[in-house]
Length: 189
Image (cartoon, one colour):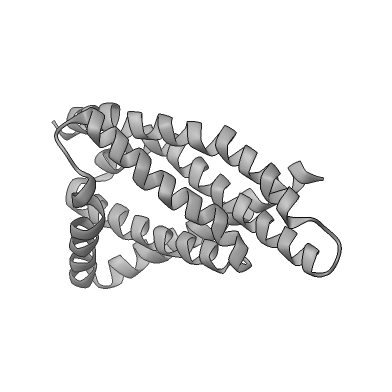
């Protein structure tokens, strides 16, 4: 039963994220000037604080940043999923904006080179963390109705988080810091 819940939560989280990614890309397309201003604001407040020329330090910064976001996605389930949904929604919109901006400015090859290498690890990590958050929310509801033990479920979910999400985030951070820039350079020539 638990594995089926995780699969459903993963599919829901992935669908919800991509819905808002598409929304972000379409919103950017409707008003590119405002979209560019938004991407600039995002860059200044989100990306620039973690960027460095030292690839190892960048990997550490990326891992910390992505782990914080993933933990919030997971424990956001304790708010009956409201925080988890909000984070998925805002991240989907931001990714949509940035992808659309990059598509217009640099083209599809750079978009693909910039997202696929580390995205194959990072996106499943985020979506799994969100799915775990939604299952946590569901277990809290069950406990309120006298049909479950949310604390025990949170412990099981936490183990899955540590064994699944953290390794994916490590792989994503290393790939994004060391490999993704090289691939972007190759396709930008």
